[in-house]
Image (cartoon, rainbow, N blue to C red; front, side, top):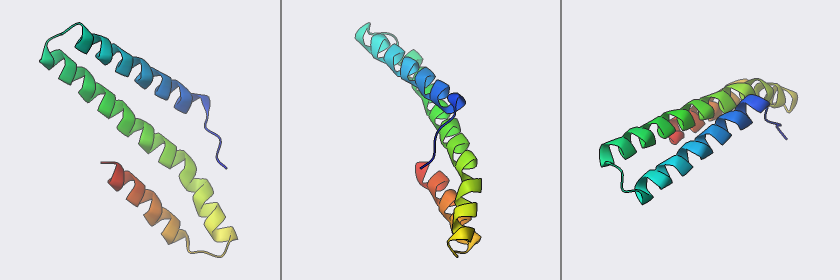
Length: 87
């Protein structure tokens, strides 16, 4: 099981705060352009978080694949698929 470092947790907490901010903006009936701008920022933050998590886990996935007799290429392809699927 992978443990996540403080950076990942901090990023996700910031995203949570951004989402709460957008909810407040909607409740306050703020301009849709401002809401969309904030949602775009959230999407970018989520994308960066996904990349960070995949990158941090890739080495251990390759090591695990090697130890279990699997081809490391499969682990790499799985990581690439996770990134592509997240888009």
